[in-house]
View 1 (cartoon, rainbow, N blue to C red):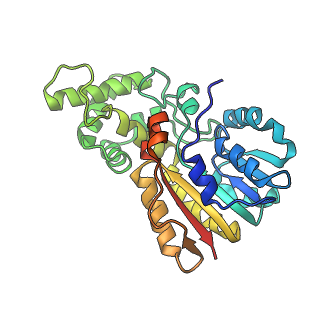
View 2: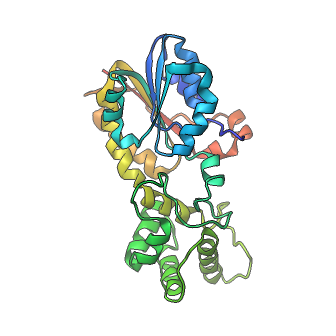
View 3: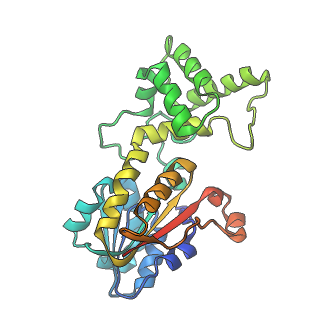
Length: 302
């Protein structure tokens, strides 16, 4: 079983200022890379609550953390309910909280939910398939051209948002967009027309042309930016005095939300441990090129 490599692990563990016996929470458990590092750092008297909305992530994490036994409490749940879940499991106040907002490679490649434009899979994109949120397929079929344009522009910062939305609306008149492969081809066709090229994949600035639209759809399907805005105040509220919160973001929209919230509370409830975001060092970039966009911000509650 391939395991996702945690990003900025050393910097996160150091920044959290972990001590023996600490109470910690990992809001985005994934493959438990950060959780394992935290559990090793807080010793046999420390406890960790690991949360994830994806039941498959919980099952995977149990396989990686079984040696820690009852020191690791793993719960299926969305971090928008952080305060409630932490209280229910006696993790309030917490000494350290971590949020890694990236999606692990196994989540993209092994779930079969259409997260990646590199595979032809049903367009679902829900993180938690038990909820009643609209799937990516339903959004593409039912949103107006203006709404599609808006989410591609705002959530994906896509320069051809209007043209791609228009092409999607033309396509769906005759056929429902069922798979990630179909959507990727619509995007590629739009770029080919715009660039007057017949190249199969007209590369733009090193990114695959479908990257931003797929990101935008994923954010819309899962309400990720609203969830982030909701969880940050909860995390600060349940932190112990002197406790620290570390947030790792992977694109400008997330980082902007984290930065603005931290700055708005600086000197009131918290202090900024690092005024500028911590980014991966050269070695990590070489070992894991996908870490290149990661930014780590840490605060301490006062």
